[in-house]
Image (cartoon, rainbow, N blue to C red):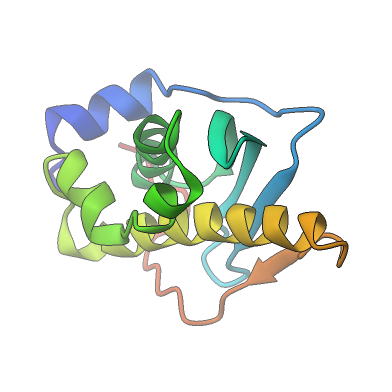
Length: 146
């Protein structure tokens, strides 16, 4: 069983910004049919800043913690600042993740980027981006218990 930092455990046990935004103007949904992790991030953008952000995640503790941390990192930030959030930034903000769980930070950052892409697509009149299934997300334990 992987060893998690106190911050990972805190964000898993007390996730921030859980839920949906009914009038979100950007939604990023990312999932992997192989491992079962699914993340959905909702953003409300005003004046090119993320005013509100919420998430729903079905997955392991690390997936929930990284989703929670991503929302904390981007609230109030500009879209450009939010787009610069990488999986490494998420993992560092959580005081690290076990190597076998680094892919969870990829999913969280990627779901955020999809929400921003969705916002930009809608703003340009192209419509929503939609859900993305990733086949390259390698997960050896589905819904592992902490």
